[in-house]
Amino acid sequence: MARRKERGPWFWRSAIALMLTSVFGLFAAAAINQPPPTDSKTGCRLDREDPVHTIVLVDQSDPFNATDLDWVRTLLDDEARSLPRYGRLTLVVPNSASPYDPAQVFTGCSPGSGTEANPLFQNPKMIQQSWERKFHAPLMATTDEALRDTVAPSSPLMEAMYTIADRPDFQPEVPSRRLILVSDLMQHSPGFSMYKSGADEAAYSDSTLADMRAGLEGVEVVARIVPRQQYALPLGEVKAFWRDWFAEAGADYGSVT
Image (tube, rainbow, N blue to C red; front, side):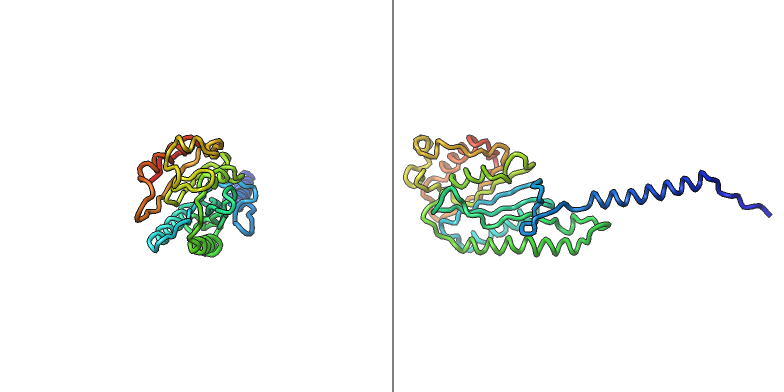
């Protein structure tokens, strides 16, 4: 009868090494997947390392009809769903009473969708429920509330964008920054009013607002124009004015529509 060959020391050393490697590998994978500390209210990273920040400036100075309300909700829903984990979305409206203090209606960060979850260390269903409860539902609820307030005596769009450009969470350190302007694009404030001067660059150059510059270098600008039955100015002139204005601010204005 053949004698069973005994396993030598090399076998046990290899087995122990493999076991230790596996254990350390699991600990390393768990550490890599350990989420960073986040703010309990916004869900944003406490180290402020937002991978994306999208700011939506909604000018509700004139009434939105039902169709307008639907596409604005759809726009925000699409933006929320496209955010990566910890991406920030902020909803702002102009403030007629204090033009350089636009009202922040909502700011929060996506906890990530269930499709992004790692099933080895996370529960996709719980991740999706968290996204719905903590991020998406509050965003849509505050949006509906903000859009119901549909009348304001002025539209200080430029002033709002000057302030947005100075936000500490909207600086070049954020890898991807987007500004979505939902408006009829009619700037109207004591500093400069298109209702009084038209979309005239010479008149704007003589205004007090021309002395300021919104630092929007590296920011992608998307202007979603709210249609009106009767526009106060030729729309082509208004679009051209804003293209020049965003170019002067250093923004990527190519997506103005």
